[in-house]
Length: 457
Image (tube, rainbow, N blue to C red; front, side, top):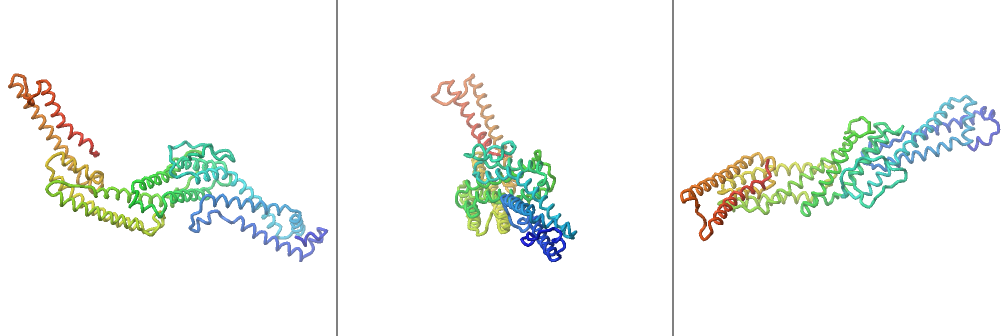
């Protein structure tokens, strides 16, 4: 360009073959450089198997905008205008190439400006979402239009994550509806996958890959609560997407955007099931069985507890990342865990059935049911013990029949003695009769309450 600026007449520039060749070489370099800038794709990290966050998308388009603005300023400079005049007057075959460079830069600049403008509200919401405490979860809030530019939210003292998810997806729908250059499935899929990556990263930080399974030997109930919260939060994202509120109008297979999120949700549910199973079986430590074979059954139950505790210890001491959906070792370990638990289910079913058969009263049978509590709702056990609930009803019917016989006998005795039924000694007639009726009522009230306390359909 410096060489061009030293020439004074346009004609001489056009007839100087060496200078024309140099200018055409410059055009070739420019075309390649501009092509390199415009050919870059924000989806490249995803195609390489990485897991970028939404800020990568925002930074990509901001860098492209800055680069294209710089290139455009250079193309509008007097020196470039002189080069354009040389190529046009010389009727060079590279004149159309330079025109393409101008038009490509102008189109790319318009695209970058449009996308940066419409992504800005989404960027602000996602920045707020990143600053939100994961444990702050509140009721669903209806989606609202995006805030004005520069607005950072009215109240940041107690942000809630799940409503943030609704607002993010609603705003993304507005971007699709209003942007002329971001309303393509390829663009939306990229930002959706990055939003999923952000939520996965926030969930991982909340649960901590190093600590999430150690809770099996510590604060097991608290950790299970955190896992359930994580499952609910991830489901909130998928549910908000499925609701498809206007102006969202894209049409592409959800698996293209949520494949990794679906895998992560399955992993969370695996961990949730692991915790729920561990909690159920670790209750066996406190089971005390009575009856003729109570000691034998008790030792068998405690042995099962120790087996489960050993299995749980293996998960708590694992060396892999349990929150990485691509880590297959947890799936293998959990499959082995389920196989062993199924064996324990069958053994526990045998103990319960034999213990129930040894019960000589309804009270002892109900106590046995309460002792095993939620374990009886496990599918394999439930299929075998369901008939015993009918047996409990039969026991209660027997109690009702016995109470009816006692009542009939009392009425018959009263008739035989001239209307005065037999009562407890040393009690007035009316008080004695009331006391007898109360005792009969209590005899039925206890078993009835026991039956109502059993959670069974």
